[in-house]
Length: 293
Image (cartoon, rainbow, N blue to C red; front, side):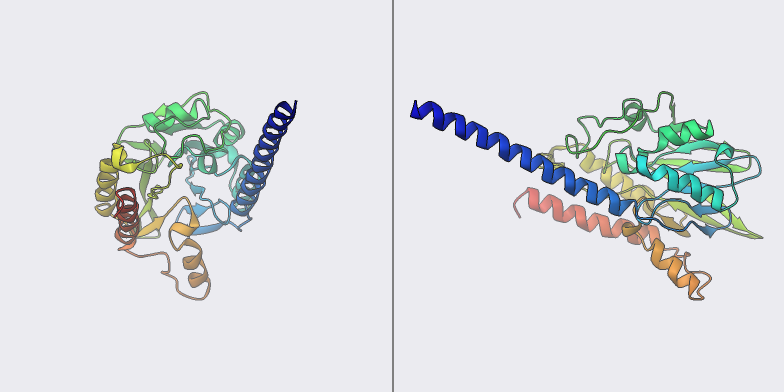
């Protein structure tokens, strides 16, 4: 009898521990999402390129008289902000004709389905990203598989190839496959003009080698793909760098500097190379740790 009571108590205690752990993790996740969704007043970056995302998460609007292009849609709960930011800048959500994505995690693709409904825009992504967008759940080849929130699926996604240029009227954005953070990671480049001055803008995908507890870059094909991604971004014309997280590049610092009087604060022709250098060093540390060095 005592043995059965003890066993029952132990299994009950284990279940309680699991439930407590789940509650704690859920609370931590909610805090992270709330921090990522902190409001940020929308602003012009340069020419017809605007930041309409949150304080932490990127959503970039490129505008024209023939329609607009939106890259990334942050979290599902970010959609009201993005919608209102677009309106605040004097544009209409229904004039978005194309929605693009850097990578298919819930904090960058989570709002795409809703914004597609609001705008009627077509959605385009790399082949690997398109497969995830259609299900709303990460594939096993994602380094963070098993630790990511799902999001609302996008039923129809146009597949874009490396080097392909997508257009809306006078807007022309080129896709650059930059896998590593995910298998389908994509960076985007375009030209934006103010008067006669035209600059090359790069919205570079995340390059962080973050993963779940069991994933190893040393045994993944993503390790070699990371190096190709570095080379791609290092060689792009890059006057202005934008990234899916404001913490990955000095987007908000540049905004503050411009508001303080530096009209060229966003222009840094070494920004893409600096970005790559930071994450290449980070990956080296990760690989050394995996190899026990």
